[in-house]
Length: 603
Image (spheres, rainbow, N blue to C red):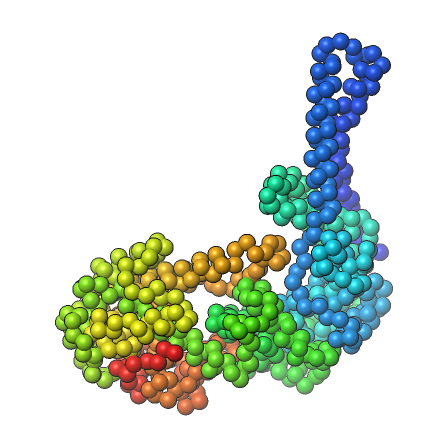
């Protein structure tokens, strides 16, 4: 017997003792009532006030038994949360099932009842034999039978990045966990804890709110013992797996860390922009291989990892890796972004080859449209700076090139627009409607609004980069207009997020409520402004200088000039946004041949 099993069993018994004590507390009023009724029947408690006391105790006992019965029924019948996964039948991966069963035989433990994939860099065992799962159609087949072994959930990035031998070494301690999981006391304790957790969720429903309080109390009482029980199970599984590919497991764990880093970078830098545009990359798992290969090329710490690519990849254990990759990619979009569960006209897949045109270019132009919509909204009676430094009444646009002196006049008029701009930004941040101008929402509405706006308000004809440079260039160095514009963009995006959250509210609960793991990092107003100015610069470079949108596996959208990535744009944009100094960016644009006075295409 493994060293951790006795410890896990003793902790499981401690959890079950909490259940027994809760049952005793629920039965205590009934026991007192039985004693009083028996004493009254034998004449030992005759007269007053025992008649009234007996009646009151019997009423309390009946109420406690009723509530206790309802609580016990909820704990027993409530469906524990099930992680959304992609089921993998034996017909779809016979070699993988054979590998897992061979591992179970070598360690003398029951094989998992089924295999499922999750779009994450982790693997675990999950019990899906609860009766509520069968009633709700969540689980079916051998995995849902009473007393069935747990389901083995494997992180899909492991299948594409790891080699077959590495995957076997990583899965050995996970599969070994089916042995301790089969112990009756451990299984009973786990079922009790999962039932309490499900009861807490049920307590959020109308008429059952009182159930959450006792469920949380019982969870607190058994929390320490349940955690120690799981540690004991993990220790026992690790001890049993010591004899299976132990040396290779040390090397494979390095690949686990590398896969996690590449997967996180791919989701946040590459997939998230596509999800925000209503598209989902159809082959994320194949993309993580490209991302990690690129990482190994750049990082000397990862040298030698690409030599492994000559060995058989674990995805060869699947019959149709492309189909499985597409299913896990769609699930990843649902879990991490909250996208629909199925593809549709507004939620369509995108191939990696089409990513630059269908995602990067659209993203840049949508952000450029939002930026110009915000500029239109901030144009007050005094107007934004004009090309000649005068009032807003002039309809003539700038005719100077990127190196002309017109920005100086534009910068000198910037303080005149600070007061109305700040007022508009404050109104947007408070969630109230903007005084004037389009709402600045993303997508077709923003693009149409920006295209239809009266561009003569600030003296610039059309959505030009010159307009952005002139508005952000601040001769006084105060940067107040940039702050107002950043506040406006933040308010517009917050309004969009609130509208999206309202549209999806009340649709699902528990494990069905998505996104379970949102990836959207908090961004300051300055960061948003820098991103939008960068998008505007990239649009101008594509339209007038022959540049092209591109994709980097680790950094996401990039600008390509002559087929080479230009990574020197960000510091120049920051000089404009943070310091109000457009000269470094103007020099960069002039060297590239970008015409800042040319209107940018927003659609």
